[in-house]
Image (cartoon, rainbow, N blue to C red; front, side, top):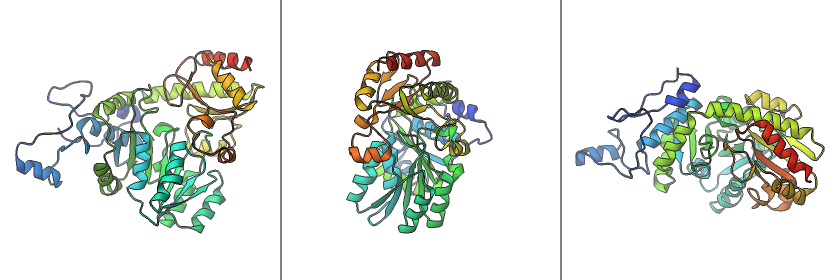
Length: 398
C-alpha cells in the first residue's frame, strides 16, 4: 500500500468523505483498521532501507500506520496544507508543536486567555526548560506590537477563538509580526475547526487540533493533529514525535476518519443551533452577558466576520449571582449535560472557573474575564427548540 497522492482539485465535502483513503487488496468500501504495532519485511535489506528512508513503507505504528496515514492525509486535504501529523490527544499536539522547535533561552508570546492546560504548559512547563514567555491581551493589536518590540519570540501561540471567553486575535496581524521577527506562529483552531477558519491562509505557520472535539464529534476518542508544511512536519516535528512517543492509536484514528465524513453537515447544524440559542440568552433578563462570535453584540464581531465563516457552536455566557447561581442553573438542566468536553453531538455545559481553568488563580481568572458566573456551552445537534426550553426552565428556577 502506498501513501495516496493529494487531489487538491476536489471540493471540501468530497475530501471529507474520500480524502486519504487507502484500500487493501480486499477492496473494502469502509476504510480498514490496521490494529498492528509493527510490520514485517521481506528481507533485512528492505528493513534497513525503510529505516534509513531510502525506501517507502511502514516500520512501526509509533512512527506511522496505514490508519494514521489516511487520517493525516484527510486532515491535510481539508486544511489545504502540505502535511499533517496526528497524535494521542490535543494537548500532545500542542506540546509537541512547541517543544519540537524550542530550546533554552527562547521566548514565547501567547494570548492571555488560554485553555487551562495550554496556560500551564506556557507558564509552568516551558520555564523549567529555560524558555521565557509573555502573555498578551489577545484582542489588543498594540499589545501584540509592544510584546514583539520588547523581546523577539521564537514561537507565538494563539487560541482564537480562545477558551472559554471566545476572545479573538487578529491572526493576519500577528502573522505579519511573526514574519518580520522570523517567529513560528502556531494557531489553536479547535473551536472554529478548519471549516469555519483557515489560519494557514491568514498567515499561520502551524495549526493544532484536538480531534477529540468536532472531528470525532461524538465523544468517543482522544486525538490531536498538527498541520504545517512538509519541511516543518518532516524535519522538525517528526523527529520529536517519533522519539518521545505521543502516537495516536490506529483505532482512534479510524474513528476520527469516519467522523470527518459528516463534519460539514454537523457543523452547519451546530452553528444554526448556536445562533438561535445565543439570541435567546442575549435577550433573557437573568443573563448578564453573552459572548458568541455570530452575534452583532459580540465585542469583536467585525473581526469574527473577517476571519471566520460562521460563529461556531461554542457560547460563553454569564449568569447573574456568581458561582451559586451558576451551579443552581446547571443542576436544573434536563437535556444539556454537565461536562468539561466540547464539540460533541450532545450539548454540554461547564463552569470553567471550577473545572477547565481551575488551575489558574482566582485573581488571574478575574483578569481574564473568567468570573464565577461564567458558563461555557457547547451546542450540540439536538432540536434547538428543545435546548432553548431546557435553558429557559433552568433559568426560571434561579
